[in-house]
Image 1 (cartoon, rainbow, N blue to C red):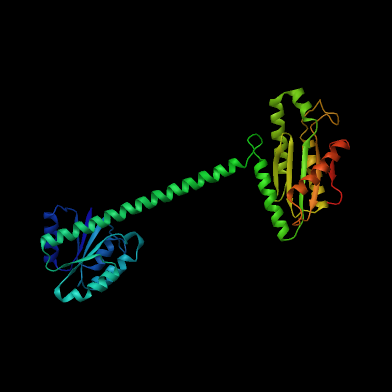
Image 2 (cartoon, rainbow, N blue to C red; image 1 turned 90 degrees about the vertical axis):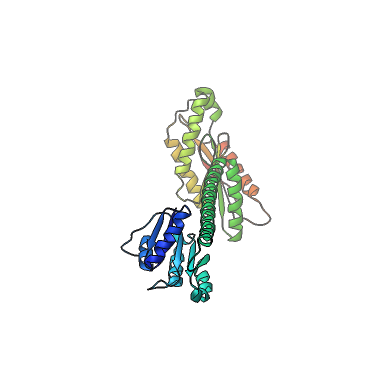
Length: 328
């Protein structure tokens, strides 16, 4: 706990130091000028910074800058703003006290200081310093807690929107996302496309290879679908069971159909053996594409139904194929 005395008179510096020592304040640093004080505070080169200056006793009439100007310059620095400054003022200097308070001083002591008055002012100033430090500590802790809570919330949000098995978006995220994209397209207006996807004969795959291999298959298919989308605004989601959905904002029928064909080919290229399939010796998918320009009379369920019908037609037509909904 260091107390910095800024006083040009050697006699008065020694007297103040003696009074402070008598009051139990042993760490006292004298400075004969504002320039020397600024060096101790790290404000002027060459710096001779003193760590943890807790209070400053500043003579109102120090040469060069003067006590009021020196007080103002110290208070301009954020790191020093909480260091209390007590001015030492003679009877002739008391008219400057108001200016000193405006510059950042918290109190003043008449010169020559009386021991009881000086120590009382110093104790009060140090209480202010401790309270300021406590407040800053609380603020830092509150900021850190807020940061950690925000990070935890963001992690929770990410986890709550991810499918636990495939680690792509889950049904909850799909429902939220398609609603947002629907409203966005409604405002534009612009097209919105949806691809509904089903793994062909997946039940037979589970029956043939077991559920562990089935889970591995779902993971690989989900990854292939996800990495095949080139635009960051598109979404791949696990819709349920072996069903997936891809939302393509702004994509027309032709573009969505081309994306669907790319997805179909990527999954087939995984070459995951499927002895239980009736259309191929490997895992394949069927895809239904729906495209609409949203209107206020329709809802996202309208688009989902269109893509679902197209998916049913793709499966009825032999599977391992893309069907784009007519008139959508």
